[in-house]
Image 1: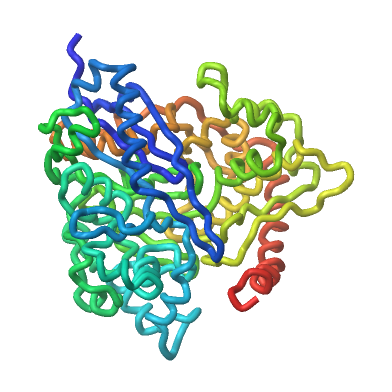
Image 2: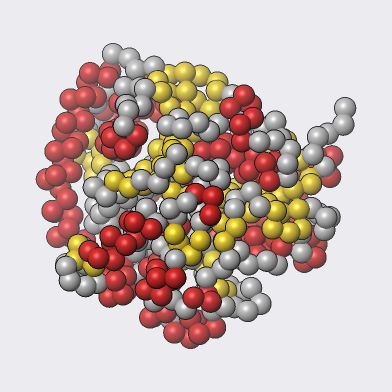
Length: 530
C-alpha cells in the first residue's frame, strides 16, 4: 500500500526537540526526541541555545529516517510547533547573537516598567498604555518580564552591542522557520507577546504603528507577519542538507505550542476546551471574538484558525513540579528515577507514579502542595509566588508528598477553571486532557475529581503538539480543512468525577485561603526590593 504524503511535524518544547511523521488523517508514525538543557541564571534568567535546537533537529530526523525510511521519503511538508514567548536576537545573516531568552526569564521586568511607566499607573505600568494594549491587542505585557516585550528591552538596555548588531528579533518558531527556509517571518500567534499588533480583526492581524513606536524597539527589527497556514517557502539548501531531505519540501509557517495543541486536541468548535499538561499547563478553547478578562489575565488571542481566536489561561508550572520532585528530591538510584529512563515498552515515570498514587487517600493525608515553582501567570500574574508543602508531620511519607504534588497542580487548575467558566460565559462540563503528563491515569482521575468535570483523554497525548503541527501543515498544503479535524480525533478513556470530589471541594477552599495568606509573605521574600 502506498504511503500517503507525510508532514514532518517539529515539536520544540522547553524540555527538548521532538519530531514525528504525521499523515493528513492524524496518523502519527514514528516519534523521536532529544533533550535540550535549560540554563537557569541568577537573577531570574532562563536561556536555551538555539544552535542546540538545530543540531537536535537533525538528530531526531535521522532517527526517524533509520526507523521509518519509507515514511520519511514521503515527506512533502514541514510544519512546526514550538514553545512561545522566547526571544532570539539575530544578525543580518540570521545567526543568533545570544542564547534564546526563555519564556521563563524575568530579567526584563524592571526595563518594562521604565519603558511603560507613567501616572496613573497599575503595578508600575501606565494605565493609559494598558488601556491601549487591551483595546488593540487584547492583552498586555506581563509585569513579570516573561515575554518578548520585556526581553527585547533587556537586550536594548543591558546588551547594547548585541542590540546594535540585531537585524531582527525572532520568537522560537520564527527562528526555526528562518533556519528551514532562509525567510524571516513571524506568525499571528508568535508575534502576539511582543505586544505591537492590532488584533481586532482575526483575518488581518497587522502591526499597530502606535504600539511599535511606543515599544522602544526599532520598527525594522520586527519581522513581517504571516498566517499559521501560509506556505512560507521550500527548504533552503543548507537546511535540506542538514536534515537529509529534498529541497522541494515545502514549509508551512506553523504555530506556537498552545495554538498547535488546540488543533491537535481536536477542539476546533467554539468553547470546546482542552487541558494541556506539559512542563507548563493551560486551559484553552477557540472563541469567535477578541476578549480580555483583566482581573484573571485570560484573553482570546490570534490563532491558527483564521476567523477565530484562542482563549488561553496559562499555568506557569505543571509537569515541571514532577520533574523537580524527581530530579531534586529523590536519590539518584531511586526506582522513580530509573522508571523515567527505561524504554517506552517497559514503562515510563508515570507508570511508577501510578503504582504509588492510588495507595494514598485523597487529600494526601493532610499534606497540601502549592505548585508555584516559578511564579504564576493566571488567574493571578505574580512572579513572587513559590511552591510549598504544608502540614507535614512525622507521619508524612514520600508517597504523601507525591500525591500532594499531583493534587496541588489540579487544585491550581480548578482555580484557573473557574476563571475560564466566567470568561466563556458557561460552565465547562467536559474537556479533553492532553500533553505528556496526561499519560498518568492517576493524575487524570485526580483532575476529574478536583474539577468535577468529565475528562476525555487524548489517545496519544504525547504527540498532541506534533499532531497539531501536522494538521496545520496539512491545511496549509491543501490536504484537509480545519472542519475535517474533529472526525479524525481519538480519545482512549473518559474519567468521571467520583466520591473524592466532595473532599476536594473542602481542600480547595483551604487552597484558596493559603494563597491569600501566603502571597504577602512571598512578596516580602522574593520581590526585588527584599
